[in-house]
Length: 256
Image 1 (cartoon, rainbow, N blue to C red):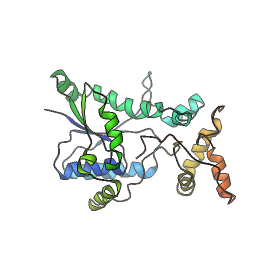
Image 2: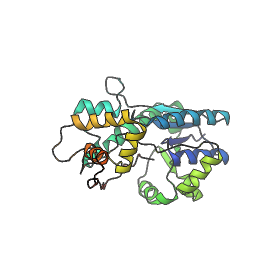
Image 3: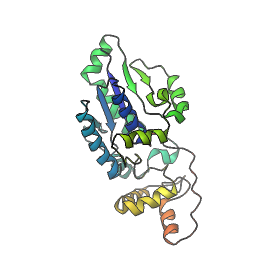
Image 4: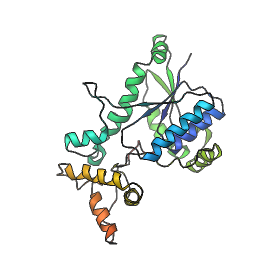
């Protein structure tokens, strides 16, 4: 038996992908969500609702994994930032935050998952579904250049030619509206509009994001925005001033 695994991001694309797999009666043996500890409340609420939806359809519920340190203790990305007095790595031009808090916890779980182990012992690769939509074929092309001894990757949304707008329609048709964006509330890739929306929707989360920025020992960058601080954005907005330059040239690929 070939194990089929969903790498679930908690946002629009991966949700639509799973709905499509269910509707097309494609096999799913495991759905994994890696929790950085920094998602907005609407994402956690959606994951619970969607798990119930999957259960009603006879499919496995979503399994959540988290990063563990060498001593076995759990650590969120927010906690790591405070412990190390820094910002998420993407603010400095790297992407180790995704590697440590998204990819590694899933790999660790799968390496100890008996179903996958049995397949690998027989020389069988697992199939991993990835939710890139039809406008992200370049990401699939880049990933396909890397041969993986354990997994064959499928990109159903690209196979079906589903773009983001169609994904939204699919989710609505399944009765699962208000999925919302999945990303850390303090992600340095956030646009100024999203920072201001965070202040309006989740002011407590904004204060936690600013606390991360305030405690960081910064020399080469200005703050969570890399070229600008989030506090400057909020102060400018509150004073009804023109926002500082807020371009960011390194998107976070774990955002959905």
